Amino acid sequence: MKLEEIYPDRIIDRGEGYTHYVNYCVKIGKHLFSEVEGTSTYKTKVNLNTLEGTCSCPYHQNCKHAVATYLVYQQGNYVNADKFLEYLQTLSKQELIEIIEQSLQYNPEIALNHNLKTATNFDSFINDFIDDFSYVKMKKAEKLGPYFSFNQLIKILQFLNENEDDIYQILYDDFRTGDEEEPLSNLISSLKEEIIKKISNKKELEKVLKMRYFDYDIIENAEVLSKYKDIIKSDFSKEMFLSFLLNLDGPDMDEIKESITNDNKRMIYSLPSRNIVLAEKLANYLQNKSLLFLVAVYKEDYKGVIEHLSEFDKLFSEGYYFLEKKLSDIVDLFMKNDFKDENTVKIFLKRELLQNYNDKQLKYLIGQIDDIEYIKQFINFEEYFSKNKPLLERLFQLDYNAATAFLTKEKKILENKYWTELIDILTFLKEKFGKEYVINLIKDNKYLFSKSSHLKSNLKKKGIYISNIKGAINVDIKN
Image: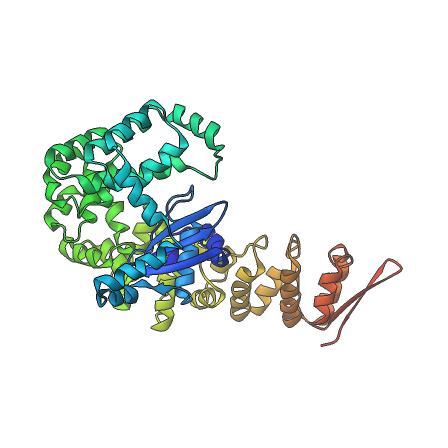
């Protein structure tokens, strides 16, 4: 499992810049728990099996704070609480009391929450909460959540949902909450979580189902509610029930097959990124070639990928663009096993896919194409030169004269380029056409080179010297 399979690139980029804002990261079982500084201090949880994260930030799920937490864990900057819990198991009752007593000095909330629980009349609190809602009472309700009964929780939640607009106005007046802070959402999430935990019979489940805004919470807690599967099936759509089944630890394969339709089959194709064990079992049971291919991709099973390779073009043409995130992995498998097939390579060399490959991968793919005109269609001088370079190199390998004619007539090769690209382009052109060609090109485009001292300074490192004397540009190439 990789972050790229769960999080958009922009979220990963932001998360990489947030690792130094992670105050702590603690591993408990298969989860990470962290505190991350942002506009506020956020509490974040990451599932190590799926890499999915939940957070108290406005983004709520799969956010930059979750990415930062996981990256900190990967760096080894975390505390393994499992070892501490094992140690606690060896202590006597008195020793445990002493540890708690010492921790109270730094975390008095343990005692405060206990006092809040024992000193509160829950029915009176709820009535007061509804009659005279305030931010302070809302925060108390959040702390008392685990101690409310099922019906008390439902009563609070119904009030919050039925009066949402008024409550937000009260919160704004009381707390001046802004876009970066949503305390009401935090309360609703925690109440829903407690309600799911407290469902103990069919009647309570049916009450929750009628409220309609619990559907995704029921799916997320599928295993906890598995004994009520038949009731949930009768209430859910096929798509929702399929999602429920796919979240069970050991779902019935026949039920899954029965629930799959053309409209929801996307769900089983995204399954390998979340649960590869179930995905493989289901693929073999259904003998679904597309799913078998995706399982092979996620398991990096070269033989399986090759066996079902024809499914790639089919899946991509049907709009399963999540495959883009696995393109580089597939090409790495090809390279590792020295796979060569021009027709297959052409499938992976669609214009819209090129940005998914690094230079080495692109060079490998393009090196199998012998058709000059086919290669030319991918060259776009408005893009980064690094993406064009392997393509141009292949053209020169195939036909030096044709490549020269193609490149020398191009007028936009230097336009709208960063200085790093300009250096790369000039170095490439010097290698192919010699010093004089580059000297003349710089002079013909002197407006690009006459002003930037940073560019000229870095060109010197490549042996290209540019100077301005009385408005005239002089170019000298030493090597």
